[in-house]
Image (cartoon, rainbow, N blue to C red; front, top):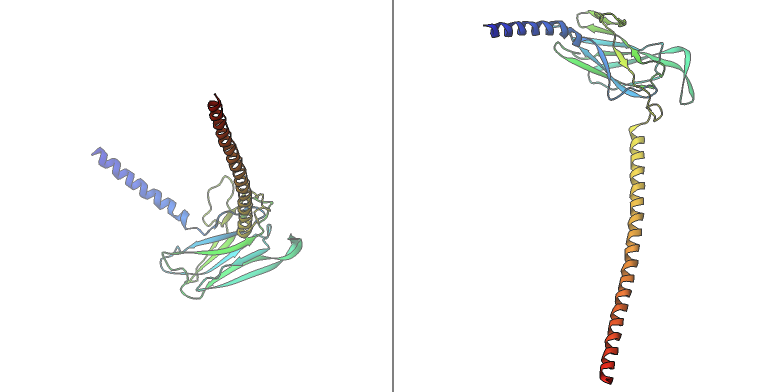
Length: 249
């Protein structure tokens, strides 16, 4: 009986924990594909779940922070969605690759051209962004989710230190430390080229070492043959001298 009661209590407790924690997984969130290093470029995904049983998500708006603007934002084409990128003039121009940028993307909007995100599903909305700011540890994006029944959910509340998570938290992208390869801006092609160059250099060095070893082996072989021939000749001469001495005696 005691074991049955314990099992029942555990089951009820587990259900309660799931009921309390499950809404936390339903927030609009943002995560990088790989790393998002300060000063570098990254591909980030906004994950948008559908939280309604009787309506589809038909529009998603993501607002970029104006205090830490990002000059380059490129969306990935998505079937069934119309994408609009909004730029605004910056109060303080940015400098990128030696050029001054006086505009930056302030909002990206995805509008469903078909069914959108239906109940029970989620959708990822990828963006290529950069260069990421170097003077902050995170970027806060305020997102607005619109349903087919005209309901609007605003994921715009900023998490305050030491307080509980707000009901509708804004997506937050954590930035990692800048890397040594130009603050993380090196491309995969650059890395591949460097790796290839390093491989070719190593192969060339190994080839040189191999050639040197072959030459040494040949020289030693010739020396060995000469020494061997000299030894045979010496033996023959010594034998002849002994034969001659014996005959004279």
